[in-house]
Image 1: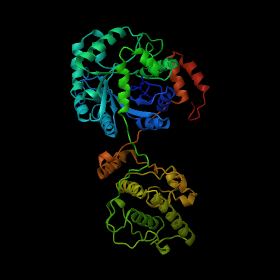
Image 2: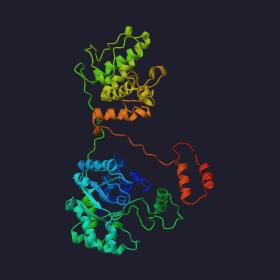
Image 3: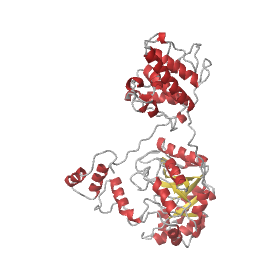
Length: 501
């Protein structure tokens, strides 16, 4: 019977799981499976990377998230009462479900963070449309009740979720745990509760690594997460569990007495389909005043004002953010600036106009006029509000448009910098301008952008730190109890070159 793994963790479940999203997609391909899910813990960091990896392997992705439920409200954060939590796996059926999942994760971090990012029943009910819920075996209150035989409490807890999700969208998880002492009791009561409250079963394996041989490596990772050593007694460990990528045959054999738990994995997976457009750049449209024909016309004018500002002559310009433009006679195709308005020699003048025309054509052809207007706007806003802005770094310093808009302060012609390093028509991708603002003013700039375009249109970019080879070696040495001096000697054998693995 066809089977899909619906409960998996990638390296984005930090210090809790080993596989990359590409390895998960590859494992599904190698196992002959048609779908695979990603349900990282309390975050969606790997979702798009996972989607692309699955498409690359001709595997259908199932996007989800394992979330933490607050015992009361997500807003309650009282020591002793609100540190306990249970888990729920949420899977998006379609793009609407994906959007709701993003809203839940964002709310969990913004409103519900208390040791971990949490949601509650109210917010889950609000954003439950097109989501499938799986009540997991691990990390919740259901399992202790089933292991102790307290079906009444299990039923009461599950009823809360039944009030939110329709029967076809709510499932109770079972996992293969043959080495656990209470496995037989759990499986027996699991079947009883299914019948008692009419909830559908689903089988998963809560994957943390691909191959069974990776169990000890995963155990080391867990020790690193909790600052433990292998020799510690009574420490947290999953060594009695096989949390590898089980084959379809293994899962069918283990759950031969409850085949619909296997069948439901495919029923869930078949409902999941997403359409993501990675070809369109969603840039806000710049509101052009009636004095200008379009964004390209305005951008050309501002660049020419930049020539007057940078190279002398009477500066007619002003700041992009709060200007009342006068009626001007500027032509997009032919420059309106005269050499007499600058202190440039003819050769310099010609070079600047030639480079400017070249860059503006590429920017316009690639649809990035608004991008430069937006960036130029908030940089100028910062400068007019006494916020120190860096002179520019990275490939954007090769754009004379950036220089003339005062986004950067380096003339690329002076230093022989190439525009194509920044924006290449042969390799279509979004421009990326690195801008440094003084720490004391950075938040003010962000707030300006949020207020202008809407808070729902502005997001911070996350940076993921990875463990370099030397640091990882030192951590592993600690886990195995090696003396600090020996660990240091080991580390000295490893290159300190960035990127060493």
